[in-house]
Image (cartoon, rainbow, N blue to C red; front, side, top):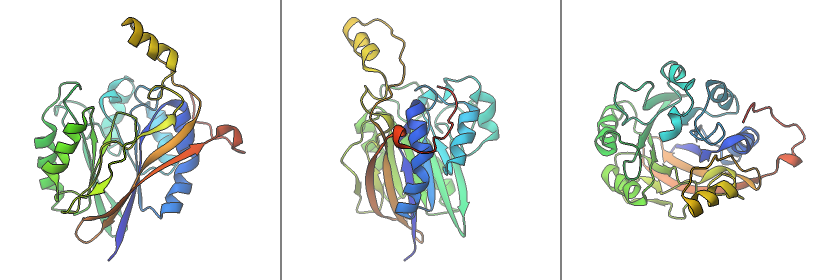
Length: 275
């Protein structure tokens, strides 16, 4: 049985997250013998969105495909870039008039992997139904490959779990993103679908979900809007590794990872540009 191994990097948040991604993706890919690397990048630019230049740099770090979520629209420059870069996904359940692509089929040697990005609707911006959207895409891409990987970007754990049972046995993996807190519920269903409610965050963990604690606390205490900036201390890269049977698309294992990153100890820092 030949295994296809996917390394998924959790939400990359700000400059600390991009530094951790730049320095650790290739070593992690080697460590886990990964065939394909996916990273959720929607918080890469100061915690809100991503710029075209950042996206281009992320590809050079060893990432094959980038997923996103509701913050993909936060940088206006991305609107022209999305249609021309199909390996940077926006949630597929935005209306068809939205720029960009919600899924992509990539070729790796003799194999193909389909990656689908959908977004939940509970406590999230209004979008089309993620369940019907995902099912429609799965029915199409399954004609080309049994290896199907889903990034379910959602706030509510219940909605993510519901997606597991809705697509159970139809896809190889469903990984949750958005909340920035890694959960300990990774599993393989009896029908061969890997699942985790949230893969965590790649960024500064001495923070409130990646942001400086002071403004976040102030907003909770006063109800007043605050300007958030990304934190810088206790950087980590988090995510999961999923091993998939390349013949039938069934997941064989899912493993969480969380690795510390100390930029001060790096001998050759990588220029990850602004913010």
